[in-house]
Length: 378
Ligand SMILES: Cc1ncc(COP(=O)(O)O)c(C=O)c1O
Image (cartoon, rainbow, N blue to C red):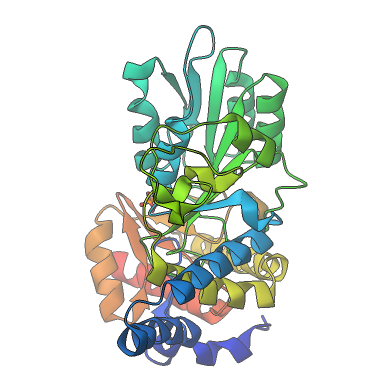
C-alpha cells in the first residue's frame, strides 16, 4: 500500500527509532511543534512577559481549530481540558422542571460522564445508553433514548476504547427535534476524522490537543453554536470570559458575545503555541485526505488482526471506526511495556491494546505491530 504522506515522516524524529502508534493517547512529536515550544521559551528569555505574542498564539490556535471544523474563530473558546469545557457548559444549564435529562453512553470517556453525574445535585438525571465494544448500533440506541425531557445529549464522536464512531449528525438532528442540545466529545476524532459544524447538527463540540491533533495536554478547544452561546450563561467563569478581559473591573461581570464567554482564567499560552503549530500542519495536509488514508490503514489492521487470530474489540467495518484498532489482551499494561521494548509505542486500556496510527504511519507499521502483539501473546 503506497504512503501518500511519506514526505512528512522526516518531521517526526521518533520514527527513525521507533514505530509510534499511540495517537489515541499521545501522537508523535513533530519538528514544528518542537520549534513552537522553543519559540515560546525564546520569547520568554528575550522579552520577559510578552502578552502580545501570547495572545496572538492563542488566537491563531483558535483560528486553526475553527478552520479544521469549519467554524468561525469567535465560536471557539479555549480551556485547560475537555473535562473543564464540559463543566463550563454544565454550569450554564438549569436542569429544571421537565428538562432534566442527560443522555450519554457506557462507552463515553469517564471524565465527561463524571461531569454530567456531578450535576445530579442540581437536578440532572443521567441516562446511560448501553454501548458494547465493536457495536455499530450505538447511534440508533442514542437516537431512540432522546425524549422531550432530555436537556443534553453527550456523545463521543469516536470512542476512546474501541474507536467506534457515532453518527453525530443523526444524534444531533434527533436532539434538535426533541429540544435538546448535543455536546460532542471529539477528542478521539479531531485531526483524524473530518468535522463540519455547518453541515453536521453539532451544537457544542470539544477536543484537546494531545491525541490526533499532534499536540500536548493542558489545552482544549470548545465550539459553541453562536445563537446557543448567546442563550447560555456559565456560572463557572473567569476574566477571559469577559467582553474585554483587560478591563480589570472587579464589579463588571459581562459575558463575551460568542463562545469565549465559556473561557475561565489565563489561557494555556505555551500549549496554544504547540496546538497552533500542530493544527497548521494538519490543516495544510487536509483532514479529509488524512481520514481516507486512516480508513485504508484500518482495513489493513482488521484484515491482519483477523488473519493472526487476534480478538478484535473494534468494529470490523473500517468506516464504522476511527484510526484506533483495539485488540483484546488480558494483561494489556504488561504487553504495552513489552511492545515498547520491541520498538512499538501502543496504548493499553483495561483489557485492550490500542493500535492507533496517524498519517505519518505506514501499513508496514501497523502490520508489524500486530504481528509483534500476536508473537507476545501466543
Ligand atoms: C474521548 C475522550 N474524551 C475526553 C478525554 C479526557 O480529556 P481531558 O483530560 O482533557 O478532560 C479523553 C482522554 O483520553 C478522551 O479519550
